[in-house]
Length: 147
Image 1 (tube, rainbow, N blue to C red):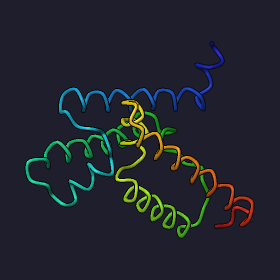
Image 2: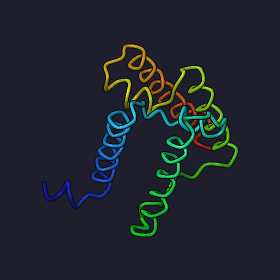
Image 3: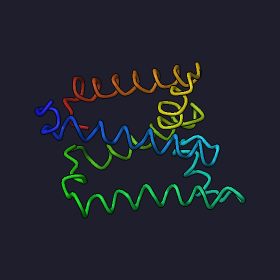
Image 4: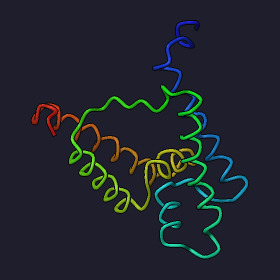
């Protein structure tokens, strides 16, 4: 157990998962809403009257939490993925397209939908996961990780 706690590579994702789960449960309990981040952000960008305040607060909370964590624990914000700007742009485009086609994102389907045992969400989450595996394998194997 001591090795697990001392290994930040293992403990950070566990803590992050717990916090995401708690935030999702809290939003459902106190607001009756599913924590699908793409839908929440879309509501902020498109300004859905009556729904704007809670959506803006949720997004601001995510951004503020990341900022505060980077001040308290600077290693929190270290990202060690070395890809080109074009690769990040292409990945973002694919993620946005996938979220649009799936009518939700990994947080809405993968966290909330699977947690509620939604067949559609389980299917979409499997599709997200398989697509990610295929994309990483393709980039690393066929393109030598150079994209």
